[in-house]
Length: 381
Ligand code: XIL
Image 1: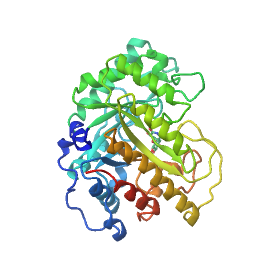
Image 2: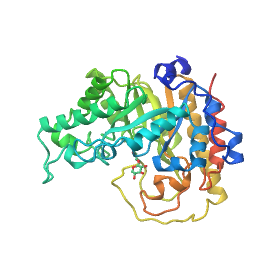
Image 3: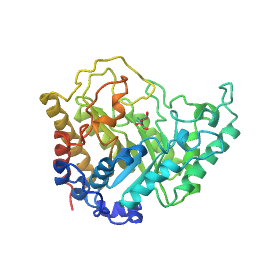
Image 4: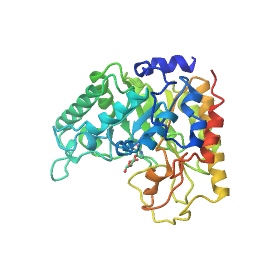
């Protein structure tokens, strides 16, 4: 299948042509202006970034996002605690602003996320003493949340990360122990997909997680995909988060993982790419994990580390472009735009100066940006 037709089929048509963003203030950095990732890929691939609503007040940042990317994900604004912190009170203003920005600039919006163990209000699945609610009560809360949110964004969001990070990192344990699972049972994932599909039969539905392409978690991911397929729920894509390190996982492991996940027949999306050049003990992206650690690069990366970061980005994008060209991968989203606002400045070590993205703190494109652009130039027409 050609990528253009698969993108058409995921509803990108609703936001118009991806190649021609609306005119914006001419204040972007001259270096960035020369290469535009969204122009390079046209309508053959969704290339996106996670953004924060408050950053859109900065015209240079907004302009950078709109000229480089044809899609966005809300970094926080569509998570359950952002949309329904208090039971029955929905707050859509910040998320709506982001959607308006995307529509104005002919960008697709990905909804992230309907259900996650983190950034999820306690009342959804627990009583005041922290005990799990009854299955019926928890299902009703989940149904109301998903139905209201999905209907609110109907026609303006191309797809939802329905469930985020349900798989366990522990050996011999399949599903993560979460408040939703304790209250509802193992079928909470299937139920979430059903509620989302009932609320909007046209919207795409994804399962999203980190390290699912890594050897230790891959069999669990395949099992979950197969269980969702066997339950006949709508599953359009599997989101490989892609929070990677410079040297880990090795390319060979990633290649194996991509191949096995693609063989399930579900479209691949790489949904949260960043490459951490700072030392740390564990890979992946478990938000509950924290570490003590050094903060070695207070200004910028030394040239050899900057070059290693760029080389790694190039290799990763070569792999993703290969799958895109085979019609098996429809989106690549970076988890952030510039180094200054990356979540990796505070995770897994708080208060570091990280350099994991394509643009530096002055919004200038880094060597990694040009490596990515080079890889994207191999996208087939
Ligand atoms: C992160 C946000 O970027 C941070 O601002 C927030 O403090 C914590 O969550 N995996 C995910 C994302 O699926 O939702 C997380 O986003 C990063 C890890």
